[in-house]
Structure formats: structure tokens, C-alpha cells
Picture 1 (cartoon, helix red, strand yellow):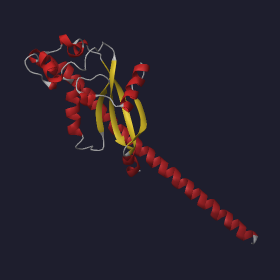
Picture 2 (picture 1 turned 180 degrees about the horizontal axis):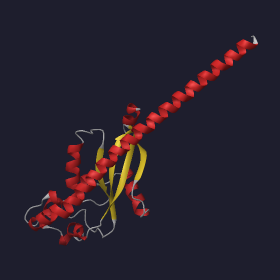
Picture 3 (picture 1 turned 120 degrees about the vertical axis):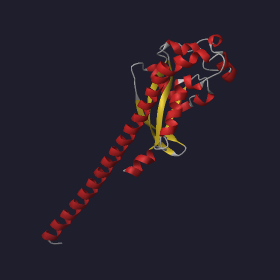
Picture 4 (picture 1 turned 30 degrees about the horizontal axis):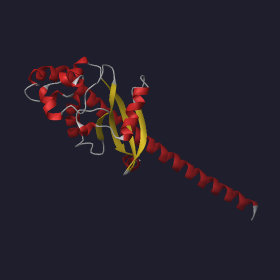
Length: 205
């Protein structure tokens, strides 16, 4: 091969390698941007749930608690209010799931799975941690999650979750005494978790 031919071959190889590298970097950037967008939406969902929880504790519960011995009103429960509201929000964001995973819940539906328990234990062992973002394997593939600790920061929560004998009669009639009691002020009892399949990020990339 002539010197000119060798030179052209080198240029072609260099060009192909450069194009491949540029394409790979471009894809990774698009993937990262899609991931960031998904996490941003997850953060909005999380903040919405937190705002609803705070509103329930400060505005709704004080009005309804006096009636709790006669009839159990789930609207007084921050987790219930948040879950109901986020269920409506998921009509726009169906890929996203939200759960308040709890180690010792009143409602068994909220009980943490093994994987969720590891998230809660992380927050219990790392008191300064306010948020955890990561990936985990599920039955449908890799998922992306954002989690925040649920801490008993209001002593009013203990009127239902302290000693079972102090809990409203209507609540005991509905859920019994098997779970959701023995909580303590400032204890981390669970985690808010927003979850979304990684396939969503890959599709958007």
C-alpha cells in the first residue's frame, strides 16, 4: 500500500473511532439527562406527599380527632392522605410508584419489604442522612428510587401509635393491636419511597 493509502486508512480509522466515541458520549449524556429528569419528577412527587402529610397533621387531624373514639377517620392519618393524593397524581405519572414503607405499621399494606427494610435501616443507622437515591433489581428489571426517612417528629402521633391502650377505640376496632404501636418520639419508623423503572430513563434517552 502506498504512503498516501496508509495515510487515508489511518484517517478513516481515526474518524470511525471518533464518531463511535462521540456517539457513545452523546448517548450517555442523553441517558444522564433523562435520569435527572426522572429524579426531578420523583422529587416533586416526594415534596407533594410531604406537604400533604404536614397539612394533615396541622390542619385536618386536630378537627377530626375528637370524633375518633366513635368512628375511625383515615383522613386523619398523614400516610393515608399522602397515598390517596399521590394516587391521583399518578394518573399523570403512571410509571412512578409511591409507598410509605414502615417497619411496624398499623395497616399491613404499609409493611416494608426486605428491600424497603434495608432502606429504613440505612436511615436509622445514619441519622444525618436526609435522602437516598439509588437503583435496585425488581421482577421487571432495574428500577431507580429516591427515599427519605419518616421520623416521628410530632408527639401527637403517639396518641395513636404510642401504647395500644391509649389509642382511639375506633382505630383498635378496625386494625386491632397487632401493629403500629410502641413508636417513640424522634424514632425513624419508615421511609417514603418513590420508585420508577430504569426502562423509562432508557426510553427517554
